[in-house]
Image (cartoon, rainbow, N blue to C red; front, side, top):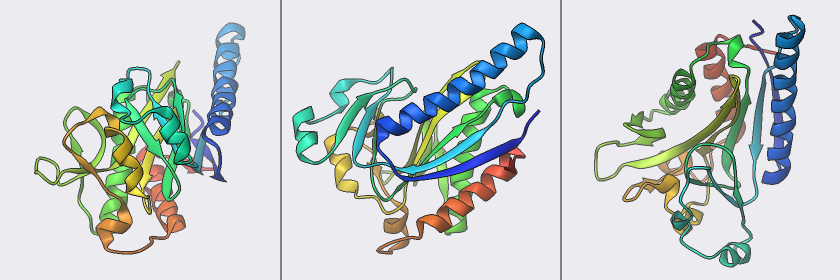
Length: 232
């Protein structure tokens, strides 16, 4: 099993271009797995962890409800945002500047073959990172992602998640609000969940801005511990 994971920081990159790049890496891993099975070879499969920020964009998962987008698509264009229907799980999500988006493209055969465990460990990575800043992140039953003040009238989501997996290869991932302009969430029902708010790390800490690089390093540290991974 190859537990080495290559890290790439793509900076600010268009959502569709990044999606295409994810698909390229995803198909590369699938191709190796198919060859190993057909030819009896034992070629190692690579693992990747992509960091990226996207320009303003809304994405709707394959099981999502378009009615959770509260404005016409032409209004999104006026706000400088794009919209895509995509092949991950989950409902509608927003990505934009000031948000850390992470796409682990892993062959789970290198780690464990359990999608439920995979999602729970991604959530735990966020929860541990929030704890580094003195915040108590929690899971909300039946709602993938990480929240603050769960089971109170003040419940608010700080990290959304949605993944796709085929033959135990993953793509898509998480969106962690750090210095995010939360007004963009007003144009949708985040993840299709009504009556709950959203928040960002800088607001919770009472700061104008939080170091994105510092948060990324904390995420990588916790990911490596939780997945027993080694950074390539």
